[in-house]
Length: 276
Image (cartoon, one colour):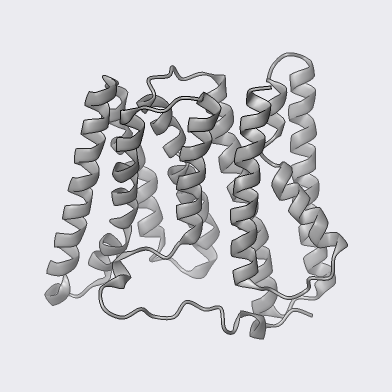
């Protein structure tokens, strides 16, 4: 059986000083970096605007922590969080404007507006009970992956099928990763039987397999390019390997390393197949 003790030693420890202002959501950083680099490699293009987009997105993510603390703080302790959040959001806006002016792409001016709804919704969902966590992660994932159309616009490329495949492919990839992790955490906290965890993992692997086969079928009829079937392959491989191995205990550090490896594999697959 799983046990909650599997989580011991892996819970986040409070940080001293001002290190709190750097978000520790490693998954969020992975999504941003993966989306950005995948777009550059699939599009096979680099530009000054694309480089300027990096601080725009990074500062926007950094602002999440002080905004969250500002909403939760008492009246007397809000000034520091307000100043930090304002500075980071202003820096994000300046970098975004410079990127738009450099690429002469007016669409870039609208990207911060597009990012606001999922950004605000994810922060507000943080006030809700634990049962809403999955919805929060869904909203955050779709919002963070907006780095794909953002970088696409910075490169001056027209919105096309390739952009949609990369965007929705990354969203699916990371949502399946979230689902796998949530299953492991719930299993550890509720002492779920290993057989039940295997059944849940098999459900994730099977649904990913069916989606991939559907994409392959659509590609055979010319509705999608065959490389649209790539996104879920790394997650499928991880799930089936887990089913065939002996890993009944949750290990947060190992899962974090796995997500990074899967993200790198996805970037490589996307790049190789898109240019084949």
